Structures are given as structure tokens and as C-alpha cells.
Length: 402
Image 1: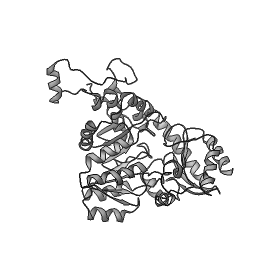
Image 2: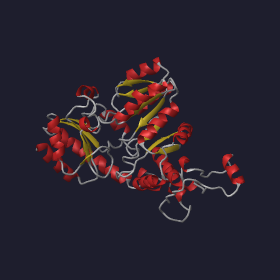
Image 3: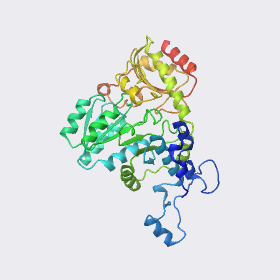
Image 4: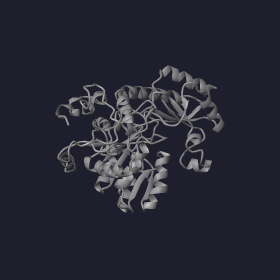
């Protein structure tokens, strides 16, 4: 493998340069001298002689063996993400939920205890509440701002991990990552932050003290609604433990998907700047509109953790959640009156996407159950794409006024 001494992240002074160049030269000279990292589609790799295989098994040489364990293309992607997160190591997988579940299964022992927050991605909650108890793993749920509650739990139980999103989905609550990391470190509790809604361009969870940071790379990393992936970054020791289980379970990211992420990340800093700008401006517009009863966005002074977001984030992300004044049918009428965004799940792509959580994600639950999670019929989650701000503003205003 080539000497990487001249390619250390310290050579670059900004995240923008890292998204373009970090890791890339790892993929060069495989076949050609192409600027673009090659897509290696083989499922297995050969050894010239048995002695070479033995050297590989004895870890005297580094090379690839089987595609489930990685490829030159996925290795480039992992190096790029590590540079951006400020991590020793990164593992990419087939989806964000794959990264989520494998990480928990690898690091939380049988009979272990997890602390999480009440606002989180529905599928994450389902895995924790439905599947982990089968392994004897218990879960305590606290409010994102309940530091007293966190202290009480880690002092009462031998807590294996504090795992949450920041910002959370869909209410964009922010956890004081530095403070919870200090509290948990004293008790030997790992901290994992799902930073999908922030991206490492807006928030450096590891630098703030977290042990691990997880991303659904499907969202802002890919950025074009055309690739499904997830990743987990942190110390070499922790990521290696997760990698061992991942190699057994599968959930491998193929090289074509890795290439789409590498390509998408080259423009990530430009896209995220646009997402941040549009979302912040629209959050102010929405908050002032008479047909909007409440806006949830960490960039607004009215947000309960605005002071935390200002301290630990450099931008507030491209998703704004708000409540339309009215009822279920009023909100449906608003969404159906929009011309630009797609009615769809997910976020973080170039195209704006809108969804009504009560219909999109929580339709299978009765209203009383939805309200336990704060999901009102009038709640809207809007993922702002990279379209022109004035076009989006005009579209939203005409739909609200309709």
C-alpha cells in the first residue's frame, strides 16, 4: 500500500477540502492513474502464492481477502469519513439502521443497560424496546435535557451506553454532548451520538467528547437520494469490536454504493451550506406566520436547546419541523398544495421533501399512542433541498395561505 504520510488530514485547513480529497489517494494506482477513485466490483481477492496468504494471515502485509470484509473503494470512503469526523477509524455499512443495530449488539453485553432519549427515530426505538429485551438488555428513556435524570440512572445502574441523536428526529432536540460525555465517562459509560441531522460539517461529536458517532450516510453524505448506507466512527478499539460482528452478520456496503457516497461527499460542504441557510431563513418565516402554531429548529432562539446548539454546532441543519394551525385535514391540504417538495420519507437530498409524521411514520399507531411521542396530526417535517430560497418560500407561503 502507498505511503500516506503526505495525505494526513492536517494538510487541509477546512472540512470543505477534506470532503473533496481525504482518503482519495488510497484508491489510486489500483489499475490506472485516474483522479476518480476506481469502483472495485470483485467479490474475492487472490494471493499470488501461499506464502503471501500466510503473510496476510500473520498481519505482515495489508491487503483484501473477501468483499464482505471491505474493498479498496469502501476503504477510501472510510478514510474520508474518518478525516471529516476526526476519528481514528470508520466502518461503513449497508444502511444507517444496520450501523445502529450492529453497534448496539457489538458493544452492549447481554444483560446490559442503555439510556436513550424520548425523541428519536421510530425504528431505533422499535429495536431498543422490542428486540434488545430478548437479550436481557434494558433501556431507560429520559428527556433530552434531563441531565439530572441521566446522573440518577448512571449512578443507579451499570449503564453500558448512552445513545441518542443530536439533533433528534423529528423535534430536533439537542443534547449537551460535552456535558453528558463528562458524566458518562466518570461511570465508564460509552456515549454514542447519531449525528445524521447535523453532519460532521455542523457538529463534531467526537471532539465534544462522544466515544462514537453514527451517521445515516443515506442522507447528507450521499446527498442525492440515490444510495443507502450507514457508518460508525470512533476509536480504533471500539470500531474494531463493531467490525468483528459486522463481518459475521454481513450488511456490507457494495463498492458501487461506496463510489456514489465518495462522489456525493465532494459537494457535501456546498450542499450543507445551502441546506443550513435556507432552513434557518425559512424557520424565521414560518415562526412569524399566523397559520403556523409552532416551529422546532435549533437555530431559533425559541428552541429549548438553542443555547446548546449555538455552542456545539456551526450550522443548524436543513430540516425544520413545525405545526400547522388546524387539524389533520388542514395539514393534509397544506402538504397537497405544495408544488416543489416531494411527499416522501428521508431527508438530506438535493430535492426538498415534506412529510406529515402522523401519516408517514406513525399511521400504524392510534392517535393516543402518537401523542405520547408528541406526534400531533398537524406536525410537518420539511427537509429543505438546494433549490432557490425564494422559490421555496413562495411555494410554502401560497400553501399556507390556501
